[in-house]
Length: 113
Length: 115
Image 1 (cartoon, rainbow over the protein chains, first blue to last red):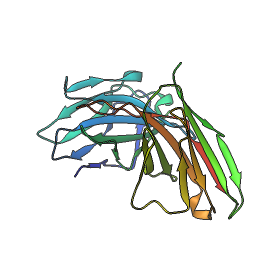
Image 2 (cartoon, rainbow over the protein chains, first blue to last red; image 1 turned 180 degrees about the vertical axis):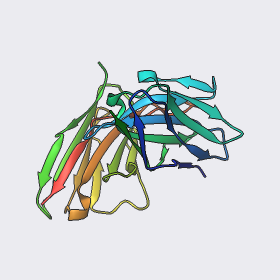
Image 3 (cartoon, each protein chain N blue to C red; image 1 turned 60 degrees about the vertical axis):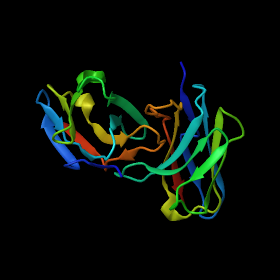
């Protein structure tokens, strides 16, 4: 069975500060991991994905994430927050042979001026 | 651009009045999904189609039905909407890849209000 835990349902950062959103996963098989962003009243947009190639994954809008198998983590970071980064972020896990994603409960990012 | 389209973006219905939400895709993907997302919660999978094969989640209420008349279109029918069915409904698609993951592409969603 697979599961995803996102620590912190709400995170606030100042504009220009480091963004760190945490995601830990549990999986008995090699996982594929994703970060999605959702703006109000919109669908989910893929930020980045880990698919067993490079462990440091770069995505859109300056975000990146590092897959750490020993820590079962896939934390999302951005060096400098922008006001436009304010949104809800979801971590998701899946594996080969299934159509289902397991989503985390989401983290709402607030960027303070 | 290839995409997933949902219509309408906003739907208002009355308690107990049937409603249909639609999803279309130009990606030619063989898997389509319907999710329900309530405020500040993760998307919850209702069902998915692999081609014409329908796969219902065990906890999806009977009040929710789906149709997929062809590869491009998929519909979500709510037979008798209750106040608890007010939510964002997300459609997603993926292309089956043997031995690999199935990346899901999401539409913009339909926000359903039940009065």
